[in-house]
Every structure is written in C-alpha cells, then in structure tokens.
Length: 248
Length: 234
Image (tube, rainbow over all chains, first blue to last red):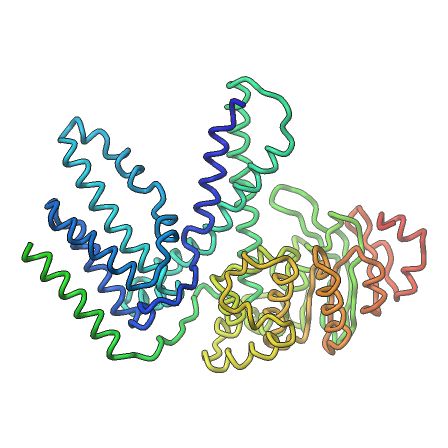
C-alpha cells in the first residue's frame, strides 16, 4: 500500500530511538575506571577524531575504537545497532560538499563524525547515566544543563514510545488504500495528535515527579570507590593513543 | 485529626473541561475511603487535589490541617504516597533501583540511608532481582509492584492510590490487597471494582457522571443497586 514505506520507516525509527539512550547494563571493565577520568579520556578521543583530516590518523583511531570495543566487552551487535545508519545519515548531510569541495572531503568528514559519535556511544554504553550526570556536576556544568540532559534521557523513551503507539493504532484501524493527498492530510493529523499526547503525558510525568519529592534539583550520588590500577591503565592507554596520533 | 478537609471544590482543566464541582468531604485519620464512579467522573482529579498536586479553581482544601502552599510542599511529599494510575507515567528513572532511591534521595536522605530504606519494601514486593532493569522493560504487574514500593518508601501517613488493581494479574492483585489490609494509615483510593472495595475500605464516596458526590456512606452502600446504577457502575 502507498503509505507503507513511510510508516514502516517511522515505526522502525521510533523503535530504534525509543531505546537509543537506554543503558544495557553491560558489565564492562571500563566501569572500573572513575567516571570523571573516563569522561575526560573519551573527550580526548573525540577531540583526536575531529581534529584531523589525515586518513592514516583516522584509521589509527578506528583501530583503537575497535580495540576499545573488544576490551570493553561491548557486544558488537549492540554497538552496530546503536551506530545504525548514522554514517549514511551524516554522509547525506555532507552530500552538497561532494560538489562544493570533493568526494574525499565529504567521506573524511563523515568518517571523523562517525568516530567521534562512536566513542560517545561506547562511553554511554559502559557508564551508568546517573554517574555521567554526577560527573557533569563535578565539573561544574550548570545545573540547568544537567537537568535538561536528565529530562531528555527520561523523556526520549516517552516521546518515541508514544509515536510508535499512534502508528500501531492507526495501522490496526485502516482498511482501504487512500489517495496521496488523503495520506498527507492524515500525516498532519498524526503529527498534531503526537504532540498533544506527548505534552499530556509529559504533564502527568511531571506531576508524578512532584509527588515523589522533585524540587527542581536532582539528587547526587557518591562516586564509586576509586581503584588506582584500572584508572592508571586507562590513562596510560589514552596517552598511548595520543602519542601515536601525534607521531603518525 | 482531619487528614483532608475539602469544601465546595471545583476544578476545571485548561481546555475548559470540568474536572469536579461542588465537592465537600472530610476524611479523618485511619479512614479507608474509596472513590467509586464511572470513567471520567473526576476520581483522578480529586486524588490529585487531595495530594496537593493541583489547586482547585474555587473552594478550599486543607491537607493534614495545612493549606496547600509552597511552604508545606516538603511536609506533604514526606507524608503522602501517591500511586498514579499509569505506572508508565510514574516510573521515569533509568533503572528500578534508581526509581526506588528517587524519593528518599530527593528528600535529603544519604545514599546509605536510602539504600537501607528501599531494601525492606523491595523484598516485600519481590522486586529485588529487578534492580538493574530499566522500568519500561518490566511487565504490567512488575511495574505496579515497583511503583507501589516507591510510594511506600517513607511509610506515608496518607496513601493515595489511583486504580491500584487495574491491568494486573491475579497474583499481584492479591499481593496488593494483602498489603492494603495491613496498612495502618489513612488511605484514599479510586476504583471501579466493587469486590475490591468490600475487602479494604470502610467509607465509600459514590461519584455521579456529573462530577458531583452522589452519595456518601459505609460499604453497605455497595448493596444499593439503585445508587450504583445512577453512578453508572452497574
């Protein structure tokens, strides 16, 4: 039917993003590293990824990304699932650059962003979200930004779950093949309905937060016990990559 | 002591839908009150008013003989446990353990104190094995048990439950009934289920589809077919 490709894409996308930020509770050795050090380490890796157009350096970083994934014991399928079609998406955005600059530039740019996002995915997969928030507070990131991030995390599921429900409900009550004009109109209604429903559920969740003691401040937890050896190994590993990146 | 003193309450939603009108009720300590009525008769709105989560457009309400003002919010949050109808709205943290820790940590308990506090309820509701799971991955019954355990963290003096037995299996339902029978504080809940009301309450508020009180009385009210039909429960 006419509407199927678009709605199937929307349904898959909503299912994908529904769990995009959700922790999978991987028992990774990276969790032995203090989150404050982990965050800095991963940010260095991101900086190394986006600070060069040299293919050699980028392939060196790619090698280390895969090494890190293996050492972190992240299931490869999970990493691939999270990365998804992201490189294709970035390349699509970069497409005009193929004509304005060159194909090589567009490809290298995509490669750089892919590496940077991959490191962030590895970091979020191996670190509990509340520890990430705690670390941001430790580094004196303004509370409003940390709270916004915290809300984004908990509302992402809600938003995409609601979209998925609407799409499934529509599908269950549709019988005939309509014109493209009708489908377009219905798409607009769907979008309106989606925003209203998400807004209403958001209100309910906010009331639930208040009923449970929310007072415009998020609580803080203590950091895990500091283990010297894993932290030293991690720092040494990041230093090695940085030195390697400079030499190549 | 009056736990709730409500007088001529009226609430209208922002889209002008009437939530409740002309509602007066006193609830005393240790009473177990059930709001009974058809869908959309204003039960959930009333419960939110009783919890101090929303304010009436007109009329007055006192909770624990205190006005619903910002200065009293902390007291209300420590002493009122509110279970929402839809656990998906109620559970918003990354893991079940975070859910359980949320209220005590938010109210200033240390992490160690909070962890000790949650252990007992988690054990009672059989959810200690779910600690690491994201709440949205749980079944309906598990979500309800986690939500109830969250509500009971601080042994609230007033327990407000919005349809606690909806969408759950028999085993979870029995567990909740067993708990509510033992609960010693004041309790207000809404439901459509008459047999459930008979097991746990001693005061019934029948609400009419017009969003007003139809009749107030003891559980013998549940035998009055005429009133139950007027309330569109039967």
